[in-house]
Amino acid sequence: MSKVAVSALTRIYQHYFDSKHPEKDLVANSCHPGYVDTDMTSHKGHLSPDEGSIAPTFLALLPPNVKEPRGGFVWKDKQIVDWVNGTMPAPGY
Image (tube, rainbow, N blue to C red):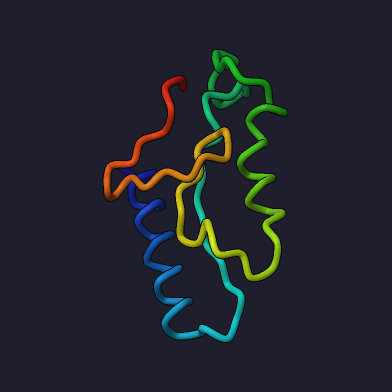
């Protein structure tokens, strides 16, 4: 449930930024890096840390004044997922 809450809060923050501070280039996004082979997954993840860094790195390096994603949820392969309206990521975890 906490991950759903973070995704919802991301959308709320982006709406707030856009409505209260439209002159500023503030962007809030969340992402799902995939099931990564880390201590946290007891090394059961099937993605390497390098593969798991694709979506977070993509989001960290967005150019100024980007139109999309803004308040989005980004899948491990940089696919923008609209979990509110039912747009689901491509098959494969």
